[in-house]
Length: 518
Image (cartoon, rainbow, N blue to C red; front, side, top):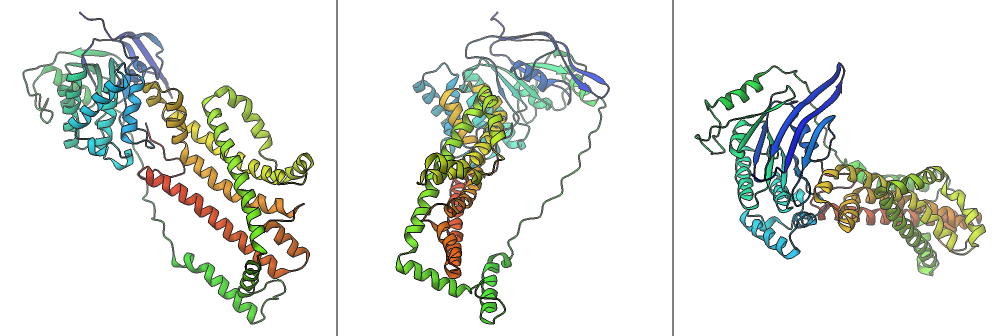
């Protein structure tokens, strides 16, 4: 008889509750050999998923012994929902399975292509998960699990969220994969018909903390649509009796549907209305045009500055400083945020320094930078880089932290390391947070730019505004403010287009932290 790939002896696991400790596993014994298909059935709260998490190494028992052996690493856990990375294409997700496979790259590719054709997924493999149906995503998750080469697959109700037709097809496809690859499977389900079809061994967990194997009648139907239905098999009746035991009801309050966001026409035309009212007030003498010149007067001044060539050197100086400081701060912020998210020791050292220096108003550092670097361009570029750095760093760190937590299961399953983990998992997964930080930093850098150009400089739009105020050239000052508004709008539009392009490229994954749920 072949050596067991999973051996559980006297497993105990308890959880705290208001009345003390609830023991969900109490002396569980289980042995799984190569090629076994073991189905765990039982009501909610009977410890099925807890047992799987312990076997996968995601939870620790209070007592007992768990041993898993075999080539290809430890057990691979397939969760209820697809564990694909939403920021990678289906093909790239599948190729991550090669990380823990004993196959060569060529062998893995050949086997992958064969199964993609067999499962009719060739036309969908270059799409992102958001562009696939739930059944297709689960097909890919299960296929990656089989291709990983793990000797034990742990499946925690992988079909529970699918419709009946898709569920039946995936059940059969899973058995087809098993016939070819022959790993041991430990399969959790609440569906007795599914257990009778998918398993060759039936383990009942009835809520008493123990697991006992039931003899299965193999004389009946193996059809996934009818297996177990109306059976007089004693094992079936015993499972049904366990499900009939009274359990505490849990009530959920349904969420109220949210109101769809609307964009009133007033929001589109309100700036135009404000300008028209402003112009009318200036012409009718309702406001003092020495301090509030009409929009047409400001526009004429701006056109004169552009025609004479006065505007363009100042605009170029501001644009150059903004681009250099913003880019430098963003790149350094992303790099350090990624490293801190990956390395807890580095985070423990750097995070207190960041927390101490972040509250300092960044413009307050300009005199110090002027003292260190002199009156050239360096202090102005540096102050913008510092402003962008903190915002991008904190957003990147938050994103990497959340992605690391949410992808812990699949990263552990696939043994991700190096480039696949740092870039393809954490960096790409945190991109919505990073883009949010970049968008915020863009506006903040524009504020810092104007403030930095107020002092010790003779170029830039900020200098134009300050110099105009100093000379009481109000029309010219307003023209500078208009240029700043246009630059800010264009900068936000550029970053917004970048966010939109990322979202469309990933099939609808938006900025702001939309990550996969495991």
